[in-house]
Length: 215
Length: 215
DNA sequence: GTCTATAAACAGATAGAC
DNA sequence: GTCTATCTGTTTATAGAC
Image 1 (cartoon, rainbow over the protein chains, first blue to last red):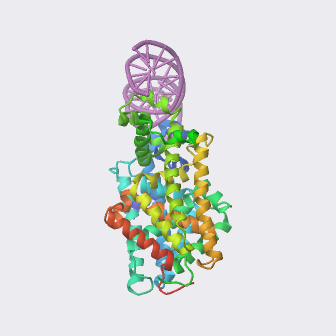
Image 2 (image 1 turned 45 degrees about the horizontal axis):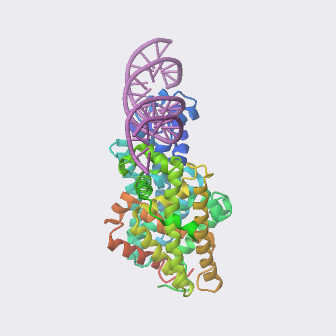
Image 3 (image 1 turned 120 degrees about the vertical axis):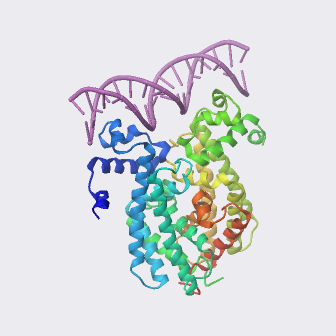
């Protein structure tokens, strides 16, 4: 108990570094951010960063790990409330969208961590823990889909492809930045558009795009 | 006529640079690629790159512009074949998926160009032409959705949110890299999985995820 | 159109004082 | 735990010979 508790104690400088790095990495990615910028944003010297993180890669992995842990907690809380598969899926999507809308850096970082696999070697313990968290998230979502299909609540489909579609629909939208804002016509992160997004995604998942067809 | 034709003449070195840069930028993004790598991959000296492109940003914009032009041509060809809105949407999605599957760099570059707006200033003529192409693509897709909704072929929904969903479902999947491969269990770009993707996306768009509901 | 050489700025990381 | 100073390598870009 006590051994794990240190993770949640506040380390002011460390947390400040993580906060600043999270915003910068979300905007410009791993390679696009210099440690001098991070130092500047934290009012610390560049060298002080290396007291808290051994390398830039470790800092990046820590940022990703922190948001994945937060997302996992949010989604598991939504799933744990029970109900039939349809109710749980609706709640899961709503919770996911709320999470991404509340933390505008998360969608971009999540998307980057999924397809910037080339930037990191993958050998740091922080990266492996982040990958494990990601694994657990996808596994619980896949389990829900599988259950819904066996009980007949969901149409029979490929679980993994459906999972990819859910990820694409939810995460991409909140990562689309200026393009999304201009396309939608209002800020993607505004309260009204977040509410509309939930409604639109739910409608698409429930009934598809076509009218009155179940093909 | 003759004035525009020079765009399509072959400029061996220039095209080779674009090819090499396209692969590198797709993997590691704008900031993650050094011009020395591009030079190495083309068997040219670093300085020779500056004879063909004024700056790294211009090279990047040229890469993005080239793939956007290719995608626009592909999608317009699919739309031009006519038919009712449902037929045209199905053909559009199939053509889009085929395009992304045939050119594995495109999904990542497209996604990056949508949300790496911070990396480029946006003032180069190459960037503005790329943005105009992107605008035309989204406009024709929006037009199709609007037509389908007014004729009653599609369920009434937000055109722009539906557009975002279509983009997320199609592009993200082919940009998901190792994560996607591991989730699906087979290479996302394998012929069998591309075929399955088309089928799964069509099923989701036609009937949604729930069984026998049209809510 | 490609090359060598070089400039000038910046990167990540380390040493050691305080 | 933060600092100054420094090392080493790399970055984009330019100048000018061929």
